[in-house]
Image (cartoon, rainbow, N blue to C red):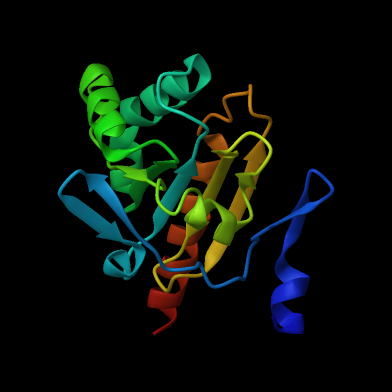
Length: 178
């Protein structure tokens, strides 16, 4: 790992290194349904929000995903793609999304278990789950904002929306300068 990357990472829980602003987001391909996959690389050219969460069907996770679903129009206005990620299987995600009427992809970091969460520094080895973590990735695949919330606390959407608004303002400033 290069020195530049080490300087842009932040520590979480005193022992895990969570990827932070300025770091290239690790690419991945994960199942969104039992027969379809999504690759981060396919979404280049637009901002992406990764919402890692511990498990389908838990009260906090359900509330968090429901909140994001309620404000999905705001993400879309900011031209961002929202992806939920947990270690649950694709069948579990399908049932959870249907029950909660979710209109964004839930990706299965199931096998190898937690590989993507590990790459982002947000896998809880002791409990075998992803931490409740958020990443905003710019159109070039660079992480611009990240946050790890306590597992029992819904992080809400204000930080995500602020980061996306900052990205939009920056891209508008660059476009105006051309």
